[in-house]
Image (tube, rainbow, N blue to C red; front, side):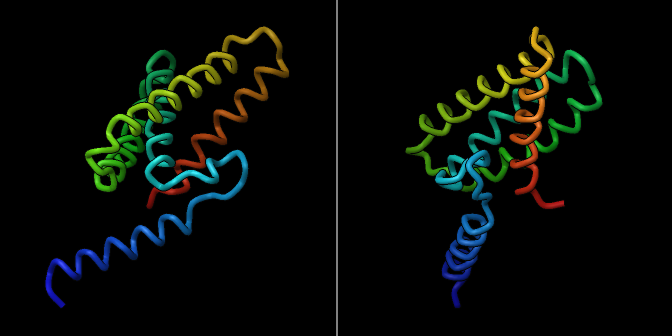
Length: 133
């Protein structure tokens, strides 16, 4: 098999594995393409990293590494013509995650804070579950 055919076959298999392994619960981005899933994760991890800069530099550094891994995956799978859509997904996810983190930290209702904290953590864990290592 030629090098190009081998590469195409490997990419096809990897895409199928990623698509099959994506979470399927309602709170874990079900129904999204792998491209949208990783774009959303990039946005969420960016919000987490920026939020941690205010409180815990070491945690921000750890999240920065996870974010870099997601960005590498995203760059490898993103067709050039989808750049605007990917950027939009990233920004929307970042803003939504930042709102949850703000509500979890500065909200006036303890129940709302607790719920926002759980949802923000679940969002990030969904993304982390797709990273190797």
